[in-house]
Length: 381
Image (tube, rainbow, N blue to C red):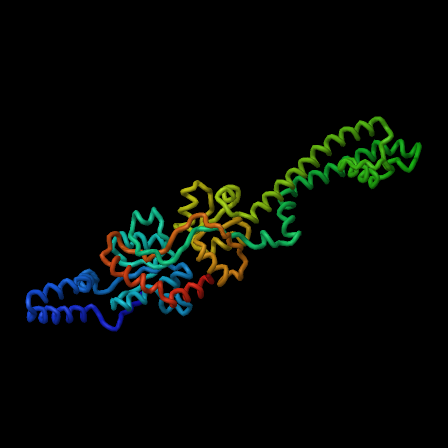
């Protein structure tokens, strides 16, 4: 818990209120009405602000995060709030909470303000209130850059791993066919040897391989009736199995290439997706009926993509950009297409009397160069 106050305090506000009413008693009636009308916003704000505001911070870099030395909080929304609080001269204290804790805490009156990567979504708007939008944002897709820039080996390794069983079966059948044709043809090879006779297991392997691949060089052929019958059977078996192998390999390759260019809702339906629990990304996937795996934070979700447990992560694009730049060394490819455009804001209690007063200062602060510089620092655009 971290407590912060401005240069004054709520006690000072009450002191000045006493002075205000003493001055008011000395004025004529018209001037009293004018002064009361002009001071209504100040008086009302002093009445609605508690002694100390309780501010929940959702640890979601770059919008809200614990400082490296664990001494307080930092981030875009934290810096913005501190500027607003300083302008309004109100004390507050921070409390760390997850997304669910922020929303439930605001509903129950435990917190007055919520900060972090809290997107304004229809579902959340039903539960709590928000200030004006702070930063244009949206939900998007990121994949590992290995999906696009991987080597030839990286591309084909997963295909052959998936098809290993079929490959082993083909090789086993090839060897068995070679053994059978050798033992069948061995008698004829010993009676009348020619260059085209199958005289060894190696010759049998060669014949089986060229027959399976439909090359048919004709340099090694069976001479017996049984050997020729075996050749006919092997031709049909090898065509079926080799075609099956080719079809499966092609399907795996197409699937792999599709995974390297996931940009739309339809693309997501065809691949493995991961999302952070209780995030706007999870809310979007659930609403669209897309199956996904769940992780507790964005770092775990991105690692799921990097280690192959998922192909794509769906999350807030500014958060993905920050993580890609700061913690993952540019190892992600983030789609330029937004699945859903939304905005971020400071979360408040439903019907909070603080809303209008905070909004006035907020609009002023986000129009200043300091805010734009902070956005560029953390996100890069």
